[in-house]
Length: 270
Image (tube, rainbow, N blue to C red; front, side, top):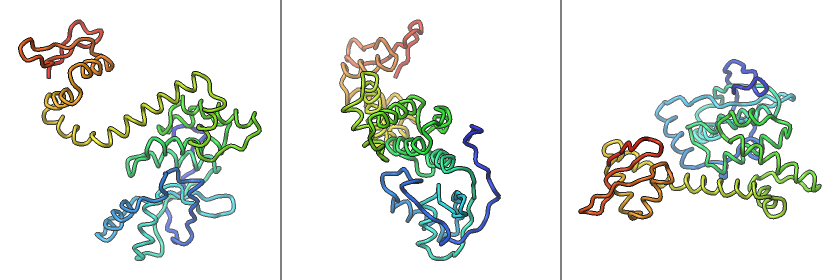
């Protein structure tokens, strides 16, 4: 965390009994599924082969309890393997809000990335623990955007002014607000969020094979996309991402090059 307001005091790495580590998924785990069994099993396999996993993060509250704030799958893998009574962890201190913001940033890393919906839920959990939090303190985690944090503040204030209980789930909070309190700006936000969600789903389905193919032959990838979309839709899509003109082979009718916006006919062939 870069923000001084949200920095936690890190203590040295310690060994702690597995039974001492407490979990509260509602407070510190934003994932739709508490645990992904396949990922736990993968980590179990690593442990059986002697691979040391990264230390989970625990937050020590004012009563001295050690709460797991990041590394739920790793702790579960240790529990299932039943080979250790103690594991190595990194203990952090601070307020519960700071712990949630910290966990939010850690859970957004590449160990097992959060989905877009889970990232938004993590942001909502952190926001509700301190509605006066600065926008940059949440947005700089890289999990939610500044626009999303501002929208959350607006939604939260609406529930308070309506004297309604604030839902713990962002999807529930947004659904009721969108039906009864949203304006055009909010509707535009929802549309943008929907597009981002669809892009992420499509990326997960086709991103890896396309990326691998593009590393070897990017032109072939573009030809395949053109075949799937058809010339008209392909041209529209190219224009949307910044190419204002497609060069078409007069004999075959195939698109053979793209001209970038604001770049004096700089052609990108494929």
